[in-house]
Length: 428
Image 1 (cartoon, rainbow, N blue to C red):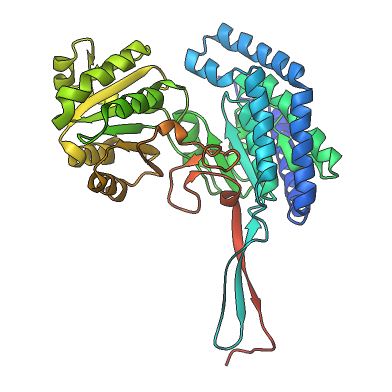
Image 2: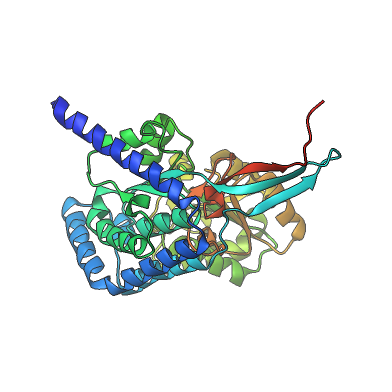
């Protein structure tokens, strides 16, 4: 493969550094912009998205045509696709973010010391956040709006598959910033498809990027986690489990399992593995699998599952570690909640797990002994979403344990400092 000419490489590096410098300057403005101006910008963005729906959909049609020509998978095309309701949802998410309380300046805790010092822990913006994502054009709006609400500047690097859609949405965001008198460089979209632009962002752009948030497939997130020189909020994959306990109500278990797998198979909160308590296999297993099959799901089961439900295909070891993002589910019979916990702790990506049970002791064990970012009881894994958590939207799901975990919303996009008020105290 030919190396790029030095002039091109130098030009790209300078372009990305200019973007970083502009974001850094914009972040200083946003840190003190105030709630009213930020909300005015957000509401103007939402209006612009609705007013420019035709342009957004036309741009999206170009992306879809290119994706189909290139052979992009059906699940990724689903992530990429916009229609009227999805555009309306993008605008609605921006409005919901505007309605959220402004985290900046919130006093998280305060206390007095015996020497008379009054100490406060106060939320502050992170600064500049770099978001690297694939396929989903709605992330352009969600990420930009969330960063703005939390007083941060954003550098967005969308996937080449969604470049036309993202550009059309980004134009609406810029209009909103301009109308509120905020710098248009507060939300920037990297204008080049060159993969080296990602490398430049991971380097931190000369110290101008404070946090990186990747949102995409395993290869993207793996690269970010391996190469980033700044902190990362990310999950590698959504290997989510549903456990049906022997105490579960069959109708509820069936409905939740089908929804968890089939509502949208392409999202990271979709269930990929179903674990069923062996004690209820005779009553629960076949009805649940029949419902999944009727919904169009391919079933891959362990030996006992295949014996009880011959339509299932034999599962391999790889099936327990695969994020299908498709209408496929791996199914295993386990020895009660102990067996479920052992399997999940061995194979989970620590994203989202659900337990369907009426036995409260089972639920408490499941919650206490599984260390995933999101745990649900008698509810679908598809609720693993910032909007469903009341956060307006999310910039991604974090499965790490430092700073942010689970849906990353406006509060998770802040840090804090300590403000100490005295009356002349000196330390002896």
